Image 1 (cartoon, helix red, strand yellow):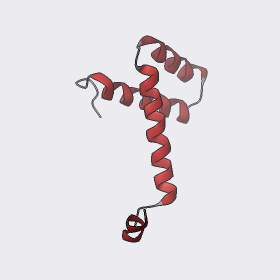
Image 2 (spheres, helix red, strand yellow):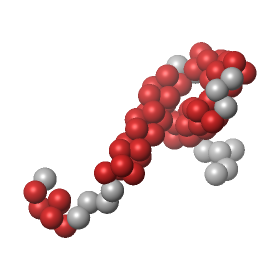
Image 3 (cartoon, one colour):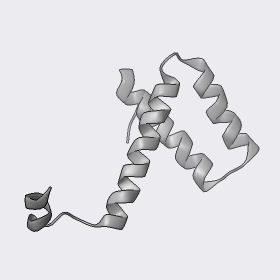
Image 4 (tube, helix red, strand yellow):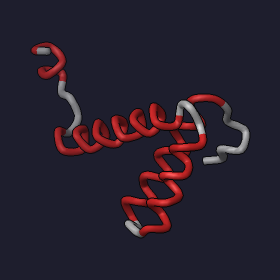
Length: 76
């Protein structure tokens, strides 16, 4: 995804997710330091990181749960 033209909160969430995924895939001091520095740079970066983690968790839950069926939709 090309983030160069994105602005605002959406870009921050995408950057946060990219940094989280980098740390998840390669848990080193260098990747952790990049995330820490980025979190300190912007006033909304912590909120964007929280949103990215929420998206990550919900995506994982959806993979475990599987798709909703028509019966699920009627009972919820």
